[in-house]
Amino acid sequence: MDMEKEKAPIAEGVVRSAETMCRPPSPPYIHVPPFSPRTTNPATMLMHLSPSELAPYAGGGDLSDEELRQLFSYLDNQQAIDSSHAWQYAHRRLAQPILDFLYLGPASAARDRDFLREKGITLILGIRDSRYTGMLKSIERAAEEVGISADTIDVPPMQPLVGLFGIAIQKINAHLVAVARSSPLGHRKGRVLVVCETGNERSATFLAAYLMSMFSLDLVQAIQFVTLQRFCVSFSDTDKLVLRTYQDILQAKRDVTRNREQREADNEGQENVRSMIKRRLSRATSSLQQQQQGQDRADGHSMELDGEYMDDVERFKGGEDMGQRRAFAPFISRED
Image (cartoon, rainbow, N blue to C red; front, top):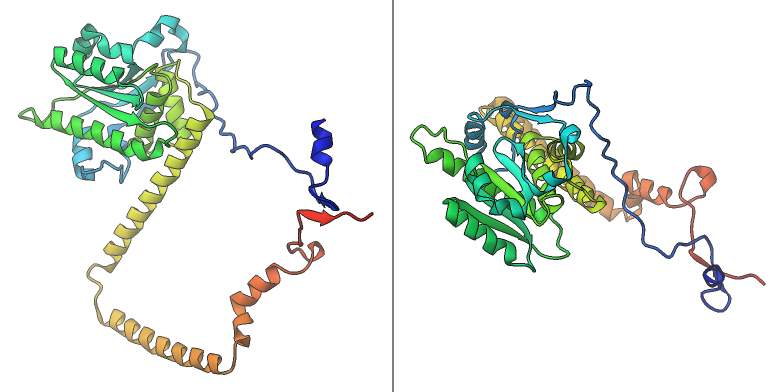
């Protein structure tokens, strides 16, 4: 029945000129393979991050790159060890360290006072659905009893997470810097527990974004690192697409900053006679071009078809036999 309806004409004497689909196009699938260990020993370190490898232009918000490097210089090397061999179902109700200063778990872990004291947690950061307020109250109550800080990031329904990643990263880094500055030598280490309802989805995506921003991991490496530490995390196709977008944004920001710094370094101290001559030649060339353009306008508009303009015209005319785009009409009149 559906096939007959699909083949029916749109209007009297009009039919489709090609096959059509009634569903929206699917986004590209992002495959994240399981991390392949190089050893048969499951307790062997599989992935390694060094604080000395802090990403340039990490995006610390109000914090400078120098402040972030100074902070991370006091932190230990970060290791990811395959936890699947010893994983139990009950572990999903607990929190696991993704980095030695960054824990991931469900909201119930934030209510475990003994865990908070034992691990030295200094901040509970909740990633919550903005429609539910229960998590905030329980986090604040537990943090007050233990004497630590609490904060939340509200995720409105149907809003992309990309715009919130930077806020979470800035909150985490600002807290770590504040804790370090609270000690006379500045060597005190803060520890942050990031939670959501299950600790497997929204909060895991935020921590993957943190690794991408701070250590230049791509989305595959970041997801693998988080999964090794907390085996029960689940990254949906939507989460992967969001992280892919964030990866592109990070790369664009780093490229822009790197190019700007390179230009500033190249231009510093180079105001000499050679640059002065180049500017004068540029002005002379510009004047000649303006004169030539005025002459072209006086001769008519035929010159507009030369060069790149002619390329555009030629590109959109002709047939497939000429290696060019053919004309396509989605609907045609039926010939009886």
